[in-house]
Image (cartoon, rainbow, N blue to C red):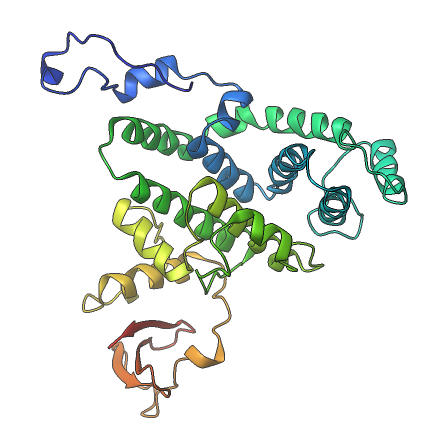
Length: 336
């Protein structure tokens, strides 16, 4: 357990709350800062995943968790287990894999050689699994010193006290995964839909998991993670931006170009524009959603807002913001 229920309270301010109520300060005192506890809570493991994405090392956690899934499949047919082991090795062990983990060379070679065997033992990943656990343990000190760690504490307490709907908490965390993917890897999640709501189905059918392209593979694994641990699909970037901005109004650091945020923009427009400005470069915009250049020229210094009805039966409206002597071109889509 990551928290202890408060059996009795002497705090007069809290006299009317249930006896199970636990404050953030009390939780922090009783929280066990060990990797096993972190890995046994959906919320804490999700925040650890976000932290590792921001540190450019999510593969070690993804490998560790996928081996856990493999160990649960000991009653599955031999061919199923072999295919699963092959997927793990192709994703995390092969040198050509974009999500290759850092393990002992002899252990790595042993895993690669084992794939030529007809029978794959259940304990094939025993040594590499143990090494991954040690790497996660070594990352713990860095994790608990980050602001995101205290966000995790707040969400676990809110989850326990039911201050917020659990689905809302999960959605906020999933949104932070999406934003972390964008910040660290430039992965711009455009579609929140998945083929199936079951993580095992996605794992067995998705061809993107073993893709040689880092962004494609990592996004596919992140979708499975959100599905399994947060019971939700991975939100789109625009949706995530709006969600997190609503929860944390001061999240975005706008030390640059503060003057170009126009007050007439709606909240979603403002939020995403802030994210664009805060990033080093704007992500590529799909052709079907690309903004249109202003035909009237850019000789004036005022910002130009115009609404354009785009092509197609869905009648999507694009809001476009263009600024004088600025390369920023912002768009957002809304159903009319």
